[in-house]
Image 1: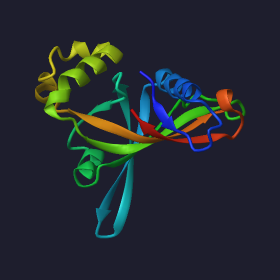
Image 2: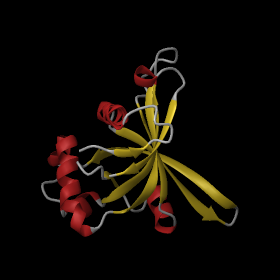
Image 3: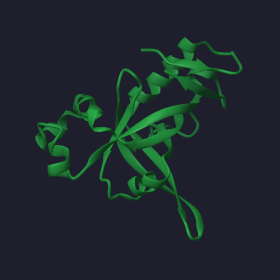
Image 4: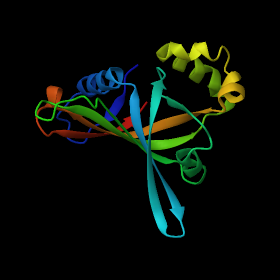
Length: 172
């Protein structure tokens, strides 16, 4: 599966961009998830960490409790930002990471079996606790949330050079 990117500068090919994106998301499985909420005091941001998986259609999933702050925020505003990076990178060496933007919602029931299979493939240790998608709710009290990526900001110094940021809109 390839990402068809809309790259305004045209400086890098879709193949170079896809290779960078998939290379980074394969190196680490933990992301930071940012959501926003509206309160009497105004907009407030929230950030959390989550393990993610993704399908060959570039559908991203996280498994989390619907009672978390980020899940509650998503009930009112599905806007989400993710940061994917290796926190062990050394400050003065070439760095890489992704900032991803889109919408995150409770995964529809029809996509839960695929999300479960994809998550188990990435994190087989979950099988110590569960054997069937229905047990996610019963045993873990968690749900799958689906993230639809719309934009990605790439920072990949080994591939594109020092301090180069590449913004791409995503069409799958």
